[in-house]
Amino acid sequence: MAKIILDCDLMKHPYSGLYYYCLNLANASQKILEADNKGLAIKYYVPANEKQAFDKPENCIAENPGLHKFFRPFMWDCNIWHAPFQSGRLFPRKNNKRNLKIVLTIHDLNALHEGQPKEVQERSLAHTQKLIDQSDAIVCISEFAKNDVLANCDVGSKPIYAIHNGIHNVHITDVTMRAVKPARPFLFGIGYVNTKKNYHVLLTLLKQNPDIELVVSGRLDDPNYIESMKQTATEWGIADRFHLTGPVSDAEKAWYMANCLAFMHPSLAEGFGLPVVEAMQFGKPIFLSNKTSLPEIGGDAAFYFHDFHPDHMQHLFQNGLKQYEAGNLKEKILQRGKDFSWEISARKYVDVYYSLL
Image (cartoon, rainbow, N blue to C red; front, side, top):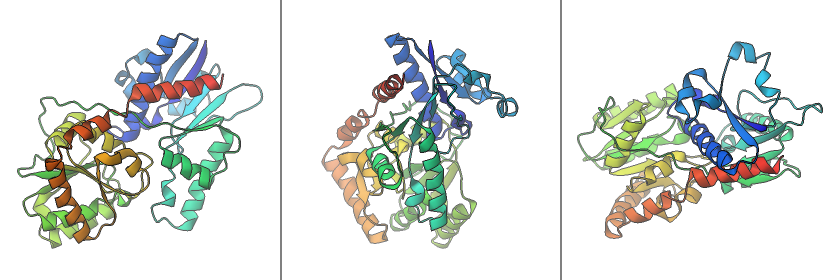
């Protein structure tokens, strides 16, 4: 039986989009391959403490960083290695003695869109190009990301696909909130808290709307950026309405998405924007930047900041809330969320695997 190994090393970052990408792709692909019964099996290379997160823990290969740095017996009968991120830690070397195929998923070329110095952009592109050169098929998680790769990298004659992420189902349960529970209507955003995510622009909405609060959850990724936001909030007299929670559980995230006034994602650079489709499950108003992949993902079910001038943001925010109520947009947002299914996306990945055998 032929064997795929999906590298799930990125699950070492719990509650992140990359964590759920690996988990959902693994579980959905396993079900499809079992139903197809075409002699292709999948295993997952995972941090040892994450084995029980999968539907079938017996399919897991537990990481052993010390041993696997030098000796990887699990690779001996591997036919397809799926590297699910362009900066993954483990990338097998190809040689003529083994017919190993490599699928590379590229999530983004965000270094080109974040205002990074030219040398940083060139170094990032060179690394991605090196992985492309070693791969047999390329998957990008949006049409935007695919076009970005085609414009800035050389894929040669290798097949390149755009496959959207599926939605990570976030369910409302009885939850004891460890994180802050706002007393007033609140805006909610979630993601790595760093300059790229651009959360600081939302402080102007707090300043102009004294009856609302702002909750931003996710890994506190950039201490200098975080300190700058806190200082601004203090200077503007809004620190008591601005909450940085750090990472939150799925249950807490669901509570915030279900109870917020609106979901906010003003990011400057995204290959997809997984929190956006998670938020669609709850039908609340969604406000995004109009940058990179976000218009592709939000479609006509979201409102878009075209710039971050306070007057524009306030106008769009207030008008968006009015349109949401007047136009009964909740159903449109819920329906848009249903366009992103891991069953559909995993089927496309499985077809890529089949094409390499």
